[in-house]
Image 1: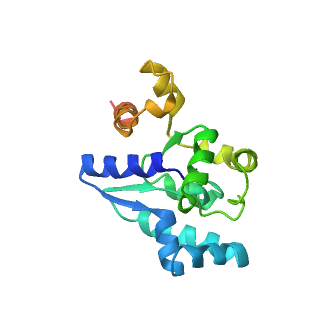
Image 2 (image 1 turned 90 degrees about the vertical axis):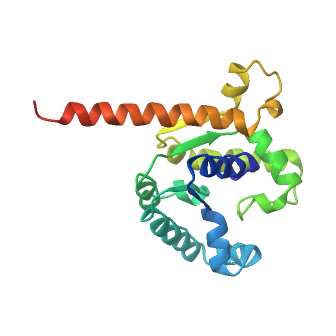
Amino acid sequence: MNNSVKSSLGMLLADLFRYYYFDSDALVSEAAGGESAAISLKESDEKGFRESETEVLKQLSSMGRLVVCAGDGAVQNSTNLALLRHGISIWIDVPLDMVAKGIIGNKSLLLSSEIAISGSYSEVLSQLMALYEDMRRGYATADATVSLQKVAYQLGYEDMDAVTTEDITMEVLKEIERLTRVKKMMEAAARPF
């Protein structure tokens, strides 16, 4: 789900790999004429909005050397999930209570008409939990999952806010290395003797 952890991580990874960075939600917003226009489009023409998300992912998946932070729409249909298969997909699992706090503190993190941003913390959290349940199967298709809670535990942090973007980046890099090794082993196993 949209949050500052995901965005910061994406930018740092792009910098490390010397790749380009794109946020698919930002591109959809830009194409719609800005964030408020994108929210209006989503509220008035959900199908058109989802088609815009798919078009952005199509264009990005045809390019190379990218780090893409995909929005929630990327996991809501099979076409978008297939487009994510053009690279390595990693689900950054951030606890919903942290996402809720981020939404209340920075409403621009949210491009979703499903969440009433004017609600209280408990209302926003409840809405996020329902949205998460709707999208969980899509998230589970990622090549790897990096859990903020697990990273905090491994590093001995009692407070998840102590986990830095660099801490998560190290875990993502380990997952990318593991996935790359597995891919090479599978390719080697497929070669004829």
